[in-house]
Every structure is written in structure tokens, then in C-alpha cells.
Image (cartoon, rainbow, N blue to C red; front, side):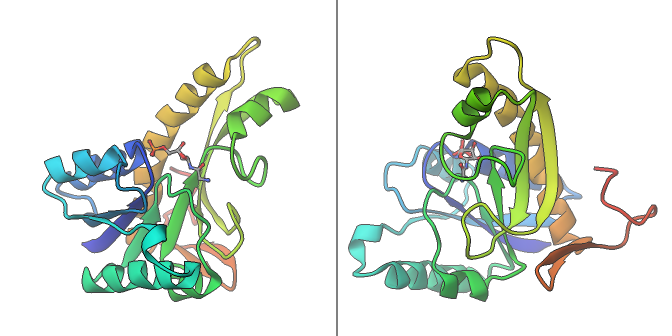
Length: 210
Ligand code: GAR
């Protein structure tokens, strides 16, 4: 089983969905630690309750972004992490850190990328008048919410949708999608090569069966 570290900043519901998936016997990954940059992240309580080691690595304890990321990197190595899963980690990572984990770090974002990168994706989807919205799991590159796409899930945007209703609809799909995407990466069926997503090991030759 691949060793996965999850980085969070808050609620941690996507982290919880990965923890729950990894509790299944045949899941190809285990969650070996949860690291938060926020000491009051609610998700830390859930992780602890599941017996998963948790760490808080606060930005303010370091002089620079590089030093902060270096400290996180040292923890990941101490836990012998194979894969890093960002789950609502609301900090842009430094290029040096990202290159260390190239092809082994994934993120979930609440939009159909490349649309609506950054914050308030649901508000912006409603304002843009799109009729389809959703979530994306992608390999992390140095640019925010960028990088080769692993999997996506779509939901309808309903007339008179509120931001709360739409975000809840998307979040439900996030909780379904992230464990599927992590499984594909952990099994080596989806990899990042030369800045692109490459699939193999599927009977039909593609990842579309997810
Ligand atoms: C999730 O919707 C995730 O997709 C989003 O933050 C939320 C975290 O919720 N991430 C981003 O916006 C990253 N750019 P959670 O802490 O309950 O998983």
C-alpha cells in the first residue's frame, strides 16, 4: 500500500473521505499522517480520532515560505510518504517543494478546471451563468490549481442556485471523486509524464471508466 500524507487547512471533509476509503481492505493506499498549516483546523480532530498522526506546521513559525515548505517536506520524508494529497490546503506551495513531489502530489479543486481557479469558484460559476460545474483532481505543478487533470466530476447548476446549495452539490462529488483519483495514482494507472497525464493498465486503454 502506498503511504499517503494529507495536507489540510480547515474542515478536512475531503481528507475524511480519503481516510474512510483507505479503511477498506483492498484500497491501495493508507493515510500515514495529516499535516495542517492551521492549528485550529477542524479536520485534525477527525484524523486523531481515527488514530492517524497529526502535525501542525504554522507559517508564522518560519522566516520564509521556503523554510515553511522545507519543514513540511522534512515531515513528509520522516513519514516515508509516497504520495501527498492536498485537501483544502489553502496555501500556494513553493516551486522547490513542488518539484520535489512532482507526479506524486495531487490536489482537489472545486471547479471544472481550467475554469475558476482560485477562491470562490462556486460564486464565480453562478455569476458566469454556466450550466455545468464540478470538481477536479489534478497533479500539482508550481502554478495554482493548474497541472495535468486526473479526474473530474460534473454537477448541474440549477436556476436560482445559491452558492451554499451549489457548493454542497459539488462537495458530495468531491468526496466520491477524490478516493477514485487517489486509487488511480496509487495503483500507477495514472501518472504524470512530461507535464501530461498518462494512463495505463485499463482494459479499454483509458481512465474513462471511473
Ligand atoms: C474543498 O471544496 C476543496 O475542493 C477546496 O476547499 C474545500 C476544502 O474543504 N479546495 C480549494 O479551493 C483549493 N484551491 P474540506 O477541508 O472540507 O476538504
